Length: 290
Image 1: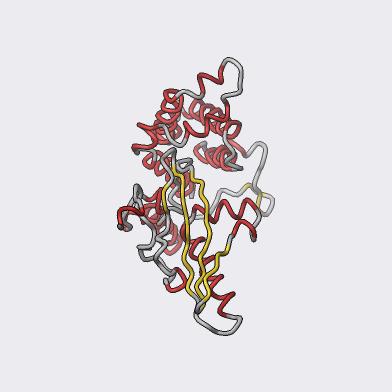
Image 2: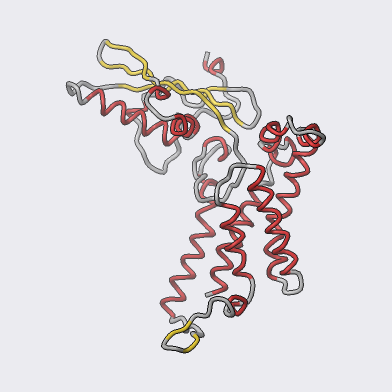
C-alpha cells in the first residue's frame, strides 16, 4: 500500500517538473517575474527580486527540485535532508505566493516516503488491543489499485490530445499538476441577440470580484455563462437567443489579445471534451481575419 501512495505523491512532483520545462518558465521567467514585481517596495532585496535573472533562478531551481526530489526521498541516506529541503521549499512558496494550503498538503503527504514505523511511537494503530500490521492485498484489490495508479499517470497527459498550448487553452489543464505556470487577467462582456434586439451583458456587474476574475480566464466557465444567459433570456418568451463573448486576455507578460472568437454563438456550441474551436490561438489578432 505504501508503494501506491508514494507513486501518487511522486507523480505530482514529476508532472509538475515536466510541465516547467517550457519556454515561458525557463527562458522568460514567467509568470514568476510578473509576481515578483509586487516585492519592489522591499528595502535592499526588492531591486534584486524584481530582476529577470532572479525569476529565472527561481524557475530553474523549482524545475530541478520537482524533477529530483522524489529520487532523494526514496534514497534512505538522503531522505532526512531531502525532506528538510522540501519543508524549506514549500514554506518559501507559501510565504511568497498566495497558493493556499497546497504547500502544507505536500509537506504532510511527502512523509509517506519514511518507513511506516516512524509515526508509531506517537500514533499507534491498534486493532483488538494489538498493533495492526496491515493485511495482504487480494488479486482484485491489487488490480484496482494498479488501475487507479495507471489513471493517475494518464489523466495529466490528456492535454496532448488537444491542439495549442494547454496553459493558454486550458483544455486538459485540470488535474495535470501544472503548478504555478499561469498568470492570466482579462475582461469579458457578452453581446446578446434576441430577435431584433441587440444588447450587452456585463458579468462584472452580476458577480463578486473573485468569481468574475475566474470567469474571464477560463473558457469552460465563459461558455457556461453564455449558456446561462441564453437560458435566462429565452425563458422570457421562448424566442431563440444568440450569445457572443467579447473577451480580452493578458497572459504571462504578453500583449493583451482576444481570447474567444467574437463571431461564434456560444449558446449554439456543445459542451463536452472535444476541442473548442472558438478559443482563439495564442498570438492571434482580429486583424488576421480581415
